[in-house]
Image 1 (cartoon, rainbow over the protein chains, first blue to last red):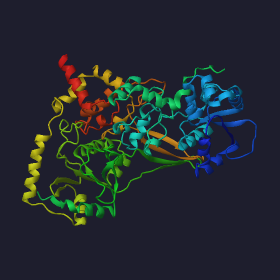
Image 2: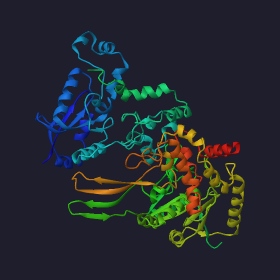
Image 3: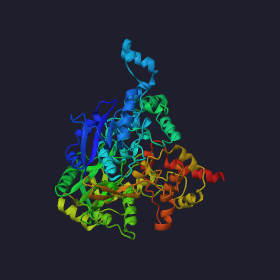
Image 4: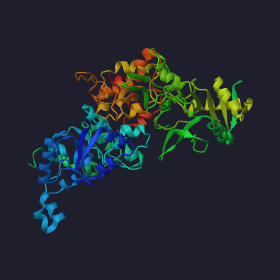
Length: 250
Length: 346
């Protein structure tokens, strides 16, 4: 029997779901293995039943979203987050740089009172997550890998290396040597240094390494004469949501 | 000197194009603003003979980053060992990297022999290139005695003025030279100019660190408990760049992948690094080298100490890549100097 898989989105651009729809030829192999029962981005049918796998895009930014993700979790055997928003909070976390009432007023003006809003959280700050597919957008090969792991019921862990490791293997010139500030050294690998391969810097969209070696990182900044604030500012673009303490929004 | 021939520089393009017609030619080309990499070329145009050092050493052709070694089919209970190799002409390899390839040869020819490596290596023709000057301040090739050629090539190019003086070292090399038909025999003037260059090199390349070659191993043996390891451990972020770019690092991991049919799949060999936190972790969670300093100590002992006991040679080529590639600025020469200083202090 095929696994029943449902896709849901929260605060996001739906770009990661678009990546799923865009997988290309491998999508046929994927569809051979799963039965997509809900996927608003590509189909209008809804099953509303129990799910073998729930795939979540987007971060949790409202009280309603908290209730909804809890509901999904309670009827899904396995929960996978896709993309930076769901996995680490992503760009929506930038909201947390401001006091909530202040930023609500800035965005909604006088109608601010009609909008329900809480500090941005990643999905795992509300419910248990079984698998993560990181990145903004998510890295498609990693999604396929994670899906296979989920179907076989074995754990998947993103590499415990920094983006630098993969970047060097791709023989990219180090961006620090070009006078640029890159988040590679502190960012979790697994994207095959996608951005740097294509001429960009790393923005840290896959989140911080579990053990980033703080003293060494400060040494890197010193060596290249880069102020710490630059790096924290850049890094906060994707990673600010993780500052929210557990149960803070309950 | 029967085996010396001359190729005019203006003929290099023809030379490469002729070979590239039937074989894959890889050579140093510019990458980014000030870096270089070995890449496939079809003519001499992109080749940069003034290159300093490539980001990755030529080991990527001998030991691919990702190599499928087995294909399997669960339902049919089929298990098929695989080998991928192709005929390659590796052009423009500096003497430090020639030494690196020789080190890999030793490792993979040891019992149990690694046939994938050996069969692949047999199809690679190596053309060396003499350095008349240092590539940059990070190299320590004179310390490791690798600034001059010491075998390990089929042909060896030395650039002098408007020509290359080529040492033909193997039958395969000779065949290649004959096939292009572009080379002439070296005469007395060529040979004396080659001798002059070697003499000039003696004044250019001088031991970069204040320690004799033979004293390196004892230095590392006596430095197992050195504070220097703690210091570089503080700097290290375990990105593994130093081992990935090292011409003699060969540690690998084996990964089993399954296709989406959840039936067929592959077993691949991928580069691993002793700098990864989990490298020395075993079942039950015990980690033999949990500390970054311990891991760096291990890396350098695998260059300057252990292989000397086992193979009677250092496994550092002096290429300087580990220093160049370290984002945190851990410098090999500085590390050796700190160890020397510490010993003096004791």
